[in-house]
Image (cartoon, rainbow, N blue to C red):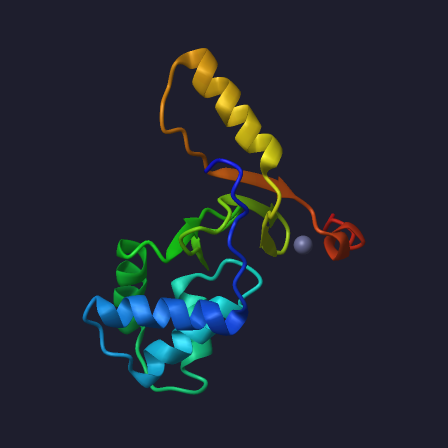
Length: 158
Ligand SMILES: [Zn+2]
């Protein structure tokens, strides 16, 4: 129903969820894939494929094309979302699982992000719009841009 709270999962639960969906889709869970999932689930900013690759090769042997294939598969399975980052040529990726909030808050300076928990007002807005515009099955993806607290304290480069 419209008033359901977004699901909150722990780090381990998210890794576990991503791993099991990948496996159910016929993917082998190699050491480098396991590591990539761990890195993505623990990232506090959207990660480019290049960044992900650099993290993974610290502990598992892998190559960049493996990371591209993994990311395509994760997107196909609806486990990650691409986030356009200001001033960056490539999108960053964030883990986003079914039932989790679609409302993203992103720091435009450092990329730190959070999925917003409470979206009751937005759901109410959706219901109002659905009624007014005679639309059914409304859904939304909200992205709020801002500057996080640590970045507020850092002066802009001149
Ligand atoms: Zn920031």
